[in-house]
Length: 405
Image (tube, rainbow, N blue to C red; front, top):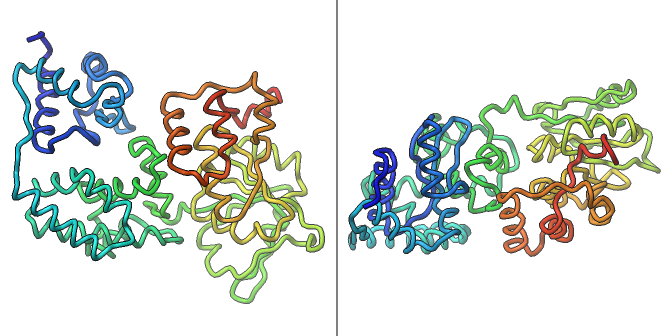
């Protein structure tokens, strides 16, 4: 048996137990927090660099799904067995299989709409098996039904809601989803409905995609334009007043509640364009260069306030544009807004990309995987030409316009 450190031996034993318990390697496993450079290097040497993920809390995890892209599972199991000096065989548990099979049938009857989740659980029952190892059959059933109800609610949700409110509403305790197994499972199941987002790198964005926030007071949007809105029968022109001073307005979610109409003041017969802008510096540039248009700052992926303003204002504009990066996430931002109201790409369309090939940046491995996933799984993605070109040639950074375009 090849010699190895105690840390790597302990890690591989954890992997072995996981394999025996689940019958396969999949998902993500935490292997430590604030590990030394030497230990992280040992993980890199054995698993490769890509499968090892370190988040903002300095938690180190192995992503088995990424690991298996380099070599099939039998090869990895043989390699682990060789290092451990023992064989690994899944522990057969007929009773557990019968319990999870019955639960899956009940979920299919109660939640037929969740076909993507149900298919996932049928193909890979790891989530249910893991929970059954730590909970009774009744606890497993109750938790799965509660999470399925929460997921059904979130798929239709259009208003900001906090993690605490979700916990109180569906689990009778405001702290139930703040951390722990149920939170992780709900997040994992939500990720099935937005698979292009990496769950480790984009946890906050996955929650925001379903309008879930830690604090509703942070939900706001920045908008510039000759905008007047009507709320509770009264007209408000403070955004327009700031626009006349050349300033943008920060609109909170509370401001947006009960708005009946939003219009572009003084431009009813010849309205300006509405430009959605991904990043801050180009947003400020647009205010200077296109001062007569309405400009909406998305601040990356559009949150609840941005989406509501766009829904209200887009039909009033002469044209709707989006200006952002042409990496996969930048084009996904444009696609999210386009789903609300049709728009065109501005300075990030296919012709612009072809024109400025020499300024394109190479995609990372993760970005390439995301682009490939979008092309494979979303045949109706509205900007397939741009993302295909980006996959082959690289992406155009929005801030490039300030420097050399």
